[in-house]
Length: 224
Ligand SMILES: [Mg+2]
Image 1 (cartoon, rainbow, N blue to C red):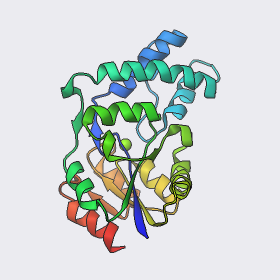
Image 2 (image 1 turned 180 degrees about the horizontal axis):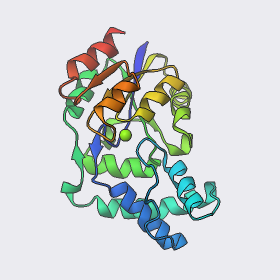
Image 3 (image 1 turned 90 degrees about the horizontal axis):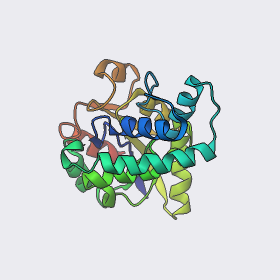
């Protein structure tokens, strides 16, 4: 029985210099005529479907799965276009080394508020998509707190017998969703929350980067 390590994407594995928000704005303008649609909407630690719902509320509109599906198609195409220049995507320090270190010692999966197509576009641009066999996405739970239970079910459906579950993420929302799913959590300071805010959320382990914290994270995962 191996532990299950669930990786957030934005701010944890990579950064795309706002490409996700930019692609959403393009899609909202194209399909709904809303300019600067995501302005003032909280995106870090949210899910893509929840972001859309919040954007729609800003414009006095309702939102649902069908609208998400149509928007997702435009968004994904735009995101792939924005991420074409290699310099747009930055893989964060220690990611490859940590994935190597956990290989064979833990089940690895994604836990992200991205739609699956967005996750594939971002990780594909970073050369990391092939490192993850499966994951849970915005399609699996509109609220982030539902993602760890969704990951447990997805692991079971794949026939995996999972021990402890550990979330690695960069926001207070990652710490909260880990707690909601009875998982342990590593907070990394390479993303969208200040070190102070992360510390106040009381993660089990907090590291400046996955490179600096590599030994600690591996010890936590394999040491139980
Ligand atoms: Mg993140």
